[in-house]
Amino acid sequence: CEALAVRLDRLFSSPKQKVPARAVVFASYPRVADEVFGALNARWSGLVVRHGRDGWQHFCTSSSFRVLVCYRTAEEGLNLHGRGTVLV
Image 1 (cartoon, one colour):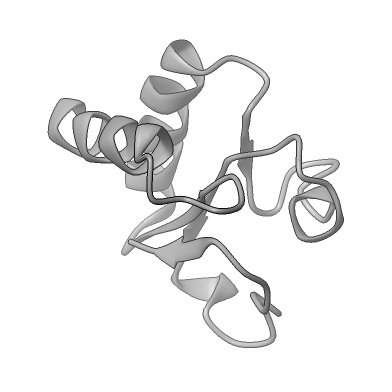
Image 2 (spheres, rainbow, N blue to C red; image 1 turned 180 degrees about the vertical axis):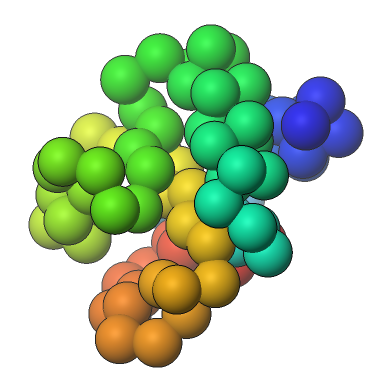
């Protein structure tokens, strides 16, 4: 998780970003997604949401969230259109 957090730090602090960068992180299993969510939320409290939990839909409409953590059930039907969103 630390290597992922370091890469996201670089993405979020890039001077080339015209709009605030956001990331969607996919994990293969729910337990892994929970662990990734916990680690990233500890680093950026309040900026990380977990797909399937209350309020996750706000990631698509609010610029206050920077990271959405999902697992494979979110692969279909998740609308990720928008500038500045990177899939990880």
